[in-house]
Image (cartoon, rainbow, N blue to C red; front, top):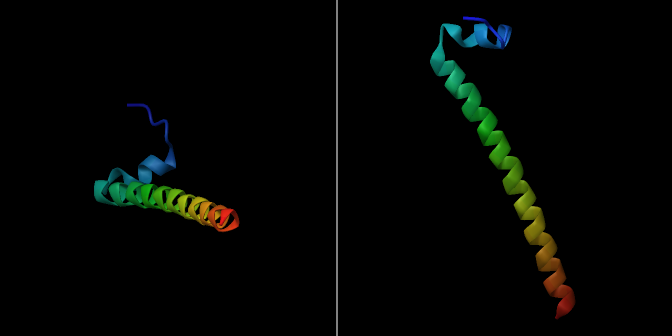
Length: 53
């Protein structure tokens, strides 16, 4: 089978569990960034509400 991913693939070839952990960490970071963005938006909305009062 051709190896398109190169060394990244080799790293996890012998340990599929490590590969899963690696992807979970990436997903976690992604979700965390979205959560931070949502919190910033919420703060902006709260500020707008304060101005409207």
